[in-house]
Image 1 (cartoon, rainbow, N blue to C red):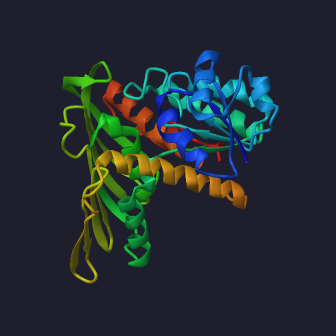
Image 2 (cartoon, rainbow, N blue to C red):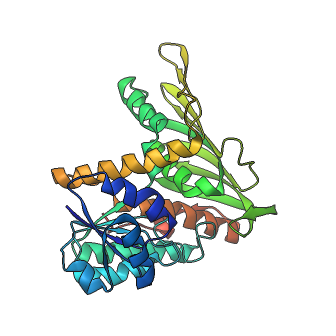
Amino acid sequence: MEIAIVGVGKVAEDNYIPTLLHHKDVSLTCYSRTSERAEATGQKFGVRTARTLDELFERQPQAVFVLTREEQRFEATQALLPFKPKRLFLEKPLVARGGQAHVVPQDFWDAKTLLLQAQEAKAEVAMVFNYRFFDQIQRAQRLIQERNFGDAISVVALTHFACWSHCIDLILEFVGPLREISAQQGNQPYPFEGGEVSDVIASFLIGNHASGVLLGTSGINWNFPLFELTVNFEGGRIHFRDLDQNMEVLDYRSKVHEIFSPSRDESRWTKYNESFEKSIDAYLDSIRKGAPPPVPGIAGLLELQFEASLKKSSAEHRPVVSSEEFPTDPVR
């Protein structure tokens, strides 16, 4: 299986290339706008490099992993589409010209344009969103089905901005698409990614009939859980904390309160790295089986729909109906 990598920064070297090289049927070719950077990565891992996109596509890759910074992802992915790639695997957020902490409504429209162009080029798009592959998240999905918890009726989330887009994606995955949102910006900025970001608080209507509250901040100490998420269903409640903490399950029907604790022999960052491995493994397996990707491209657009709606609500001091002001149709 031929895989192309576009963008060979830290995330590519730390989380993607080592995992891909564990698959004996995978061959890699790396490309970067800076050819010297690609060649250095190629020498480090013993993989091929390409100086141009023409050269990258000579080997007809089964999938292209677009691992550039989010500020560059729109232009980088657009440059690939004339080559008619079969599949694109994109990092999150899908588009964020100002960086992940500064998504604006235009990022949604750019992402929608990008996905429509990919549809026109018949390129299948998939997203990373590796938090979906944490053990506790996957255990929760199984329990919800096995115990017939029913529809979600409310959700409460607190998250550090380092986990922001992931936490939004998890809310959408467990509850459903956003319907309406009201948001406010806090007055106290906290340090984040070399700058400062103010808190964001949002209340929203989501899914079939659920409501929710989300607080985003960079004022959380890194030595403690970076996010907390509670989803209340018709038949039970599930509470998550961070990447490697306990998961609490309240089963209303059996009247059982359970705590699922992971082993404590691994750190938060080990779990983080493992989630990349699982997400990549699942994606490669979908290619081998000719199946849809585990996380489709539309998930990236829905996450940006949430952020764009939130930013517009905060800026204009009014509720925003997301499906009317940021429609995803006709993206599939």
